[in-house]
Amino acid sequence: MGKRRPLVAGNWKMNGSRSESAALLDGIKKGVSSASKAEVAVCPPYIFISLAAKKLSGSAVAWGGQNLSVHKSGAYTGEISGAMLKDYGCTYVIVGHSERRTLYGENDALVAEKYGAAQAAGLIPILCIGETLHERESGQTETVVARQLDAVLDKHGVGSFRSAVMAYEPVWAIGTGKTATPAQAQEVHRFIRHRMEAQDKTVAESLRILYGGSMKGSNARELLAQADIDGGLIGGASLQAEEFLTICRAAD
Ligand code: PGA
Image 1: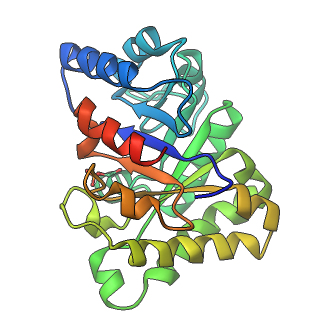
Image 2: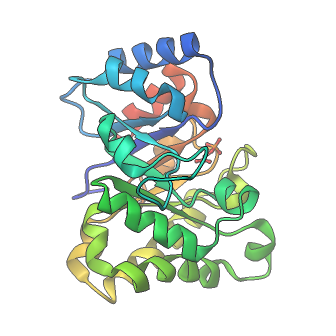
Image 3: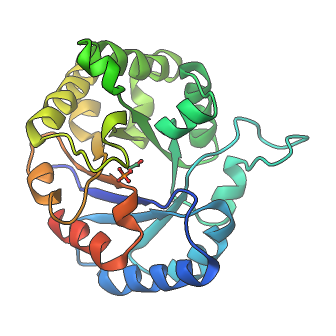
């Protein structure tokens, strides 16, 4: 990990009641000190973001959204803008999660637009990319990851990654309990950093690239020990304070 400050971000997805969310926020807040080396963030469902803001403001834990609209405001029923997230103190917003891509038809162009909308609102996008099992097995991992990355690089430039975070999330590892091996993950993380390096060495060196996909307390340490893995985007294991905190401590 070295020079980059690790980030462990919880992606709660569509889980939890109000009281469960409150308890989870309290538990996480208690376990994260401002002295810890790793940065910690949670991304609750939209409706619990004001609760996160209330519970976490003044703490060492940041919060963010799981998605945002490309539009600033207007007749877009059911949508939430970047400005609204910012207004509730969000630091981050996840963009291009594979569930958004596959279940809600978000393509590379839309994801690139959302990335821009996030930055325009003063949010730090956590840009997710990753291949499916079929793509990996047919040897297309690098092609797919490069295509997803280039869609954003071409539209917003390498300089935009000064205020962005990447997340490599192999789709076959998300929610399946099948984690990429540390070597498999490192190989793709290295590839991503190399591709950025070709455009700007400084940006590439400071860019945090998180791993996501069945990361948990018991496998976090070996993944985070890889040279180009700078933290984690955690789904299932972020729903229990102790499990999530174990990952945070592994990143410290
Ligand atoms: P998982 O999800 O940790 O449950 O595999 C990760 C993610 O989708 O961000």
